Each structure stands twice: as C-alpha cells, then as structure tokens.
Length: 236
Image (cartoon, rainbow, N blue to C red; front, top):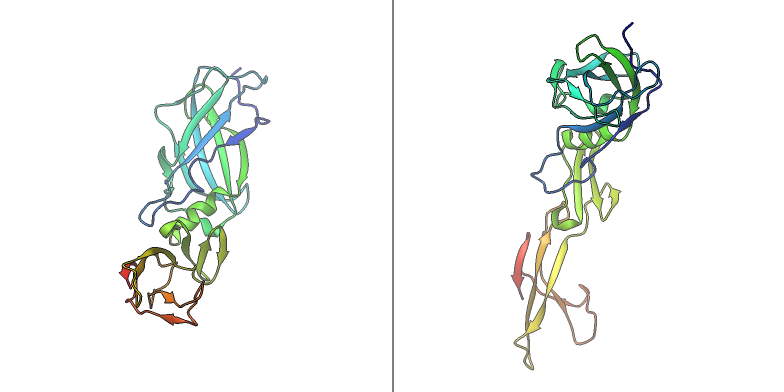
C-alpha cells in the first residue's frame, strides 16, 4: 500500500527580504521562500527523497478557488531532516501567474500538496492562511515603498497616498532632510554658509535658505536668505 503524506504535518513559512524596502527603483522580489517537513502516513520523516510538490494560492477561504498554482521540475528533494525548501513563484505555473495575484483582494491561503513517489499523484499536506507576506507584495503592486534620504517612504493605495516617516505611517508628507554647512569667510559684516537638501520628504521643496541673527538658535521668524527650490546643495 502506497504511503500518503500525513495531514498533521506542520508547515513552516519562511519570509526573506519582503519587509525591507530599498530605493525607489528597486522591486520587491517576486517570490516567497518556503519550507515544510514531509512525513509519511506513519509519521516517519521522508528523508533524502525526491517528492512531487504542487503549491496553490487560494482566495477567500481555505476551500475557495485557486488563483495561482505551480509545480516544480525536477522534483523537490527532501534533506536528511525531511525538509523541503523552495521558492514560491519559481515553479511552472498551472493556474494564473504569481505576479498577477491581486493581494488586495484577500484573504489568501497557501495549500501544499505532495506526491511521495516524486510523481503528480498529489495529496494535500496542509493549508494555512497567509497573513503578513501578501501585504508586502501589495505595497509593491500599489506603488512601492522607498526611503529617500533614509527617512521617508510613500505608497499609492486605493485611498490615496501614505507616507512612512521615520517608521511612522501618516497621510501628510515627511519633513525634508537637510544638512547645514558650517559658516566660513566670517567678517564683521557677514559670512558664507548654506546647506544641502538631500531628500524632499515626498513633497516639493518650494524654498531653501538659512535663518540668521545676532542671538543663538535663530528661526524663520528672524532674518532669512532665499536660495532657490528643490533638492540639492545651496550657498547663502
């Protein structure tokens, strides 16, 4: 009698690099790293064996329709601990495409099927709901997140634009990032200074300059210079 994979197997989902967003031109990887331990019907580990694997992303409920299904060729090998490791999104699609999943239309469930003989007579190993991972892809598909100057991020959503400012999500742009130049050429009547607007915070920089006065910590209520607009270096 052919062994069937045990249904009580624990599935372990490994998320790699999906919550770290880099520059505005970078893309969230179109894959998910995934691992699961395979046991046979007696509970024994299936080790160092070639097994057939089919992965499905199911929408709505655990018994809903699959919006994406893929298989892997050659067959996936288990290691000495019965562990399989693969990248969801790198297999051969049978239903839909991984890039075409509308993560905003969840919830979604991950179903794993295996054939212990390495063929395509798949048996369900388990189904679990995806919670955090799809929203990383959703952020990417709805505009992406970026960190200009390391301080600000934005993402287009169905409800407008969200800004991530120093780890805090808000609906208004972040403060621009500015580096101030030290004063030089100091005389009895003036000095040279300036700065560099390294990031606009998600909105247009409409004025640049410095505030100055004869007391410490001058503000824009004191005298100011006007040195153009936008990002970049300026001299006052």
